[in-house]
Length: 332
Image (cartoon, rainbow, N blue to C red; front, side, top):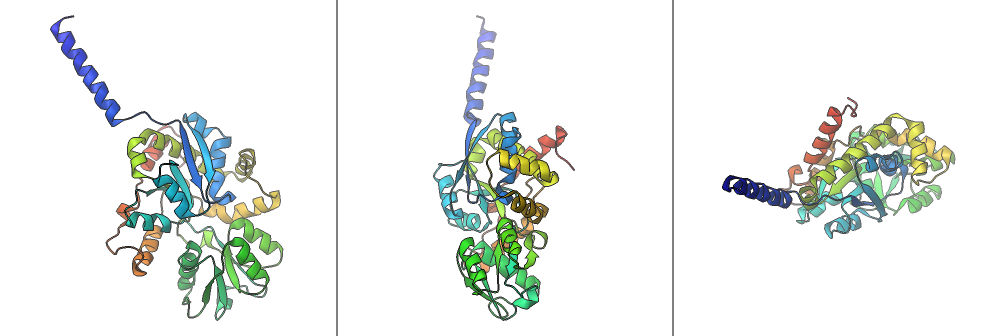
């Protein structure tokens, strides 16, 4: 073995060692935490599973249901999950402000998925003046969404309308049916069930409130350690959400095939409520998240120096979108 060949071989070995240090072994099996089993938040995932988009990207995804955004974020921060799909950016903003390693990496819905359903006789937002509106709790996403919608319609929360913490969906529905509240926000499926009982739909926030509700999250550590895994995960989800947004019949069929449950009529009608808010390519509505950040700063829940640059990390999402464009698989 001559001297020049030895030098070449040594250079190649050093390069390989450095490459392995910079790009460690990517993952094939990934864990995704979910905070909701509703169709509007899960349908891109289930379509991607049923259509084999994850398999095509060399991935196996294990969905794990965990109730509550903060608990889901804790599972990611601890390393028990790789990615998360949670409702609302507030949990991420507040976690990040406390120094936790978690970022928003994409968005399933860039509008609010709630539909506000009124008590019988309450048909418009104007009818809510002087009335009680039930929300999950003070500081919750439903509380923020209702307050924002009321302000957009020239009504002052806590003055023109009383917001009352009622609890989860079941409790809000019970309060509405018992006449304890004049209205409350509900998921599309629950809204369909209530309107079928004669309760009026006041507004579908998926068509009127551009504030992201279903977002994708991950630790920056995961993004740095597994960039290719993250990119392939996002590519599969983009393909799933494209089909989910454009082909109702095929999307619902895929949802059932991948394990989602529900009465066909309710599932079908609920789709029409949430589909307008689905993003075409997981892009993030920055302005909507800025509104949430501004409100948390105003309320003193996060430091006034907090910025979106510390909350959003969509670098790999843009790479995934660019690759799909080059492959001719991302619709304009």
